[in-house]
Amino acid sequence: MVKYNIELAKQKILVTGAAGFIGANLAKRICAEFHDTKVIGVDNLNDYYDVNIKEYRLRELRNFPNFEFVKGNISDQEFVSRLFEKYKPGIVVNLAAQAGVRYSIQNPSVYIESNIIGFYNVLEACRHSYDNGEKGVEHLVYASSSSVYGESEKVPYSTEDKVDHPVSLYAATKKSNELMAHAYAKLYNIPSTGLRFFTVYGPAGRPDMAYFKFTDKLKNREKIQIFNYGNCKRDFTYIDDIVEGVLRVMQYAPERAVGTDGLPLPPYKIYNIGNSHPEQLLEFVDILQQELISAGVLPKDYDFDHYKELVAMQPGDVPVTYADTTALEEDFGFRPNTSLREGIRNFAQWYAQFYQQRTVSQDNADVSI
Image (cartoon, rainbow, N blue to C red; front, side, top):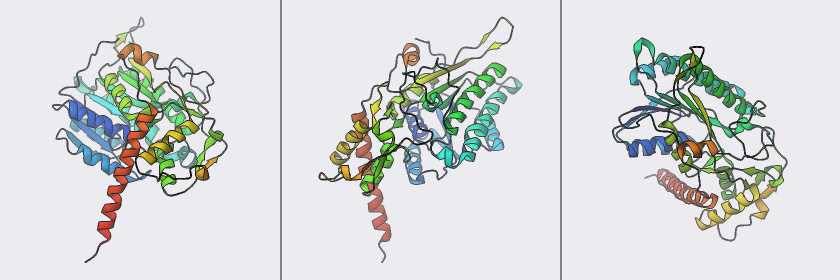
């Protein structure tokens, strides 16, 4: 196991994408455990999905006195520069990104803007944080994705595998992030760690993800489409396991060292964070419907077969995702282990409560005197 070389206590930690699913949960965990640590959360609150969920996450974060929210877009270089100049973060966790494989086919320009230009701006700000002898950024942690593995037939996916054949623009931008971070680590000695996340799910998650979309559609009695005729497997990873992994990684910055040529060896690492247990999509849907009934989201006599439709594979999709987490286990003594049923149950219970509250609020708003 590695020996931690970064203290999270009394730090200034910048989390981009702080109103996003992973960003909000990470910020909440840090604020709850490290009361003397300042967390600066950044998000542009775009409308890619329901902004109400982003506002819901922010409301929870605003309960912490050590959290400060700044609205802004990381694709704006001046904004990012001002942000670093004002707060001088010691740790940067870049989770801001345009997500979604299929949406990258429909609207590719936003992926270039957020995932390429935005990440470049963060790297440049990290680089200049060392100007004038400043201590600067001790560790840059950033989100990559299991999508970088493309259609690799070798499973489980290892960080030692070549990932040169992305099958979506989203995957290509994430692979680009890893290459850019490596170049900046080499050129400017910026300790950086990339994390390849595998199908993250849980309460208050992203509404564009299958488990959330299926729930919305089933509740509205609309048909759900199960791609590749159900012959897909996904390595579903519960949000609390993702946050635990990120938190551990944050506390170990790859060591700076000098090569035989007198130049820096890049302080750079990549890890998978996944459950290492791919689930068949039809099995996943079966668990989802059981837990939605148990949570009262759907009635006990719901006719699921009527609302299921098996369809062909979609462009950009892959048949299986499967994480090899050996490096994570060896370096940090951690392996995600939340079962799919437990995670889906927590999501279903949250969904029932969240949408019941919204319905009551809307009903009250419609009352006129």
